[in-house]
Image (cartoon, rainbow, N blue to C red; front, side, top):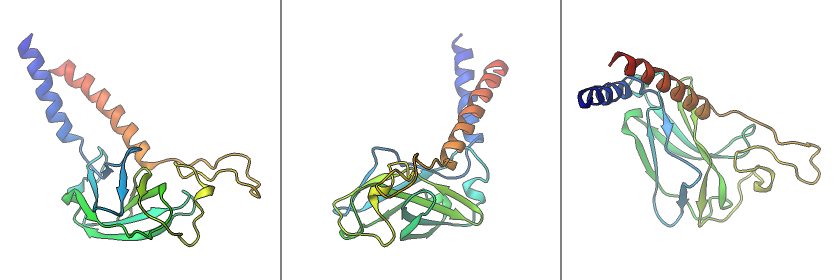
Length: 180
């Protein structure tokens, strides 16, 4: 029994190395950045191809705005995809505080977006951006004078990649547990 359990764990560990690929930003609904200290962005492979080692370099942008009209507010630079993190500082007059900000990663034709996160301890405005017109998912919301009756829905590449990875992981674990 112990040997069987050990074999299963070993197979799962080997499998976890096999499915790594592409960019998974480590940003969630509790992520907060502040102008009072350096911000850190981390990423790992997300289980899809191409693998990070197959990408030449990645351009990272700090973005805001609705999903259908994204606005670049800061270029965080071009880095090796395998580096896994970038540190940067936020200007106190960057724009309105709140859960309006996200990262966009680009490497050739590969584009990946993070979830939205909070930036606090900032003030200011961003040309073309009205924080009262979007929700925390980036959907345009009903405001006075807007004829829309429902939020504009948009899908997330990250969510799609995560669900694919979870599905492949479950299927592979079932196969591996049968084989091991």
